[in-house]
Length: 142
Image (cartoon, rainbow, N blue to C red):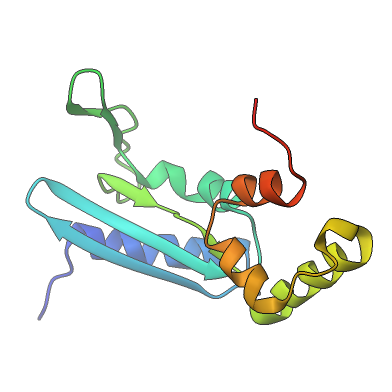
């Protein structure tokens, strides 16, 4: 009988909890084991924001990287749940339906966006949202 790695057990536990907390959102939860630790990566389309998901999953990460001392520090170890070195929630993907709703609202409400087409909008999304806003509204950060 095959035994699951700690990262795989943590991944399954995270997926189960996310499905309970956000039942209409489909999450992809993938584990990875590497030489110095393990990680779980969580991605999804539409649904909750990154901070909402992070609030649920942060307890499954038992520490954090300390840049100043160049070492991993255990800061959140728990014995009641499986944990990994890192839980990553890089971004929430948007469906084409949601992208189209956002684009249409921008076009209707902001004259600066009236000439944006879908391809231009998608290219803009590849940039950081803040950078795109700065460019569309011709403002300078800070």
